[in-house]
Image 1 (cartoon, chains in turn green, red):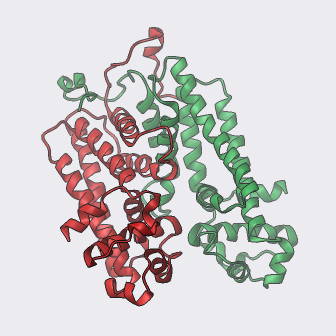
Image 2 (cartoon, chains in turn orange, red):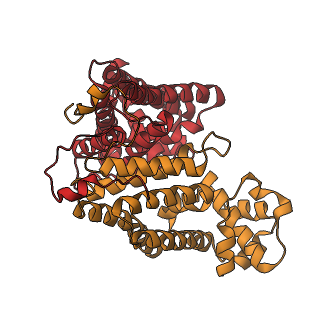
Image 3 (tube, chains in turn red, purple):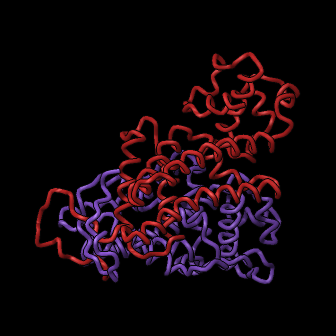
Length: 234
Length: 234
């Protein structure tokens, strides 16, 4: 199962549906089904995707597909579970490191964006389709999503306590940061002008500066008279 | 028609579907249909909503509904058109005012969030369901969405030129700002602890600080030794 997780984390490009990718043995077949399901759930929605659509897309009969996964719910759950497990593992490493809160926030944002883009199908499924889980599973899903978000809020809180960040509403700050990050999935294009790392770097700096108290000027100066301008009173 | 636009801009609460709201005369009937359609498109998606669902929700037969709107496409178009017209009018006033770029950016963010929350059904339709328009209409929709976004990028550009904002990629900055704003629709709850204006104020400041060069410290100071910390090198 570990191997399948790692392999599904590869970026899924538009050839995800092409038949020459169709694997043969059981474990690779399972991985392939999960990848194609994540692609279909992202592009057509969970509700808009039937087990028949999926069977067709992976070149199996419906009954063969049910041999691998008992239900569409099980498929969704497995996609979300692996995705959030991976995401929490990575974020936890950053959050618990000995770096300063500013540095941890920057890395957390960069990590979020790079993996969102590299693993777009799975991460967008996690963000957008979790609401389709049955009640008991939904409850656990929300707990895990909250746990992920809490790392961001905790970093912000620690930054305030350390005097690096200005006093602010930690929950709103967390939503602002995750919102700008998650929205990348809406406008990002693989053939667009930005690499994942360029976006990540830009957004990491954006978030840190937004929260920083008296961020020092490290950019080349111009129009020095303007620097005293106080933008806080519209 | 003007009157109907104004009236549809009122916040739509969960009683949007309740029968006692059902109006009688033609123009109010039309408004009511548009409000309920926006609610259904937001909550079930454009594709997930049939004209039958809508007819049922407004207490009409399908053929009476078609008397008011020739197709689901026409309904969607009218919702999006009025929504973007209103939004551009308001944003244009802010963008063209004589305020400083920082002040205009803050107001633009506040305006966006307050109207997103007050007019949630229509604005979320605009953001999420425009992709369902037929090709020619979709082209025009994208033009209008771009026009709206361009106001934000122009303010950022002007702020850089005026020396208020640090040099940065204007397009990425625009997406960061609109992303954090639009994401509010995902987590905002009418029964939650924040008013629209509280969120708007917080996010306005977040955006201005993120872009500002050497934002002056206006908050009560603590741990002054920490203020020289440079968060720019993770």
